[in-house]
Length: 157
Image 1: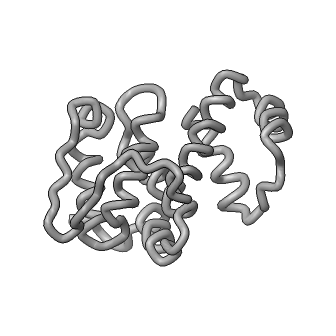
Image 2: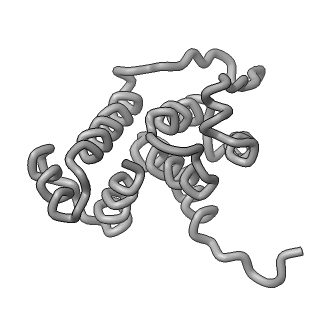
């Protein structure tokens, strides 16, 4: 499923091609690209749920005071998001790329992905997808894009 999400993100978002296809057309296109119908269905539901989170129709989180809160991860979340991933989410909050609300959207979408625990690189892509689709987060999206695509200069010590 994650491969389908990456394909869609790179094809339609990164290439500035508008996604004007309906669900049936998109399913046919993804089938022609070699993806299995069961995985296509899961990916499209994942995207629909992301849209519901963004427009406020679905809010799986209670977030009250961003200045005085600490995120405690459930056991299932700790399995999907290892220490490096959780630390990266905290870092993104500290540099204000993620707000408490967008962090919860990211965690919600991560928990809906199939498969093994998420790698840090895959988490970065999920963050990009959430920020791209979250209105009012254009600056945070650009900052996250820089973190994902920027090549370090010089020697790393």
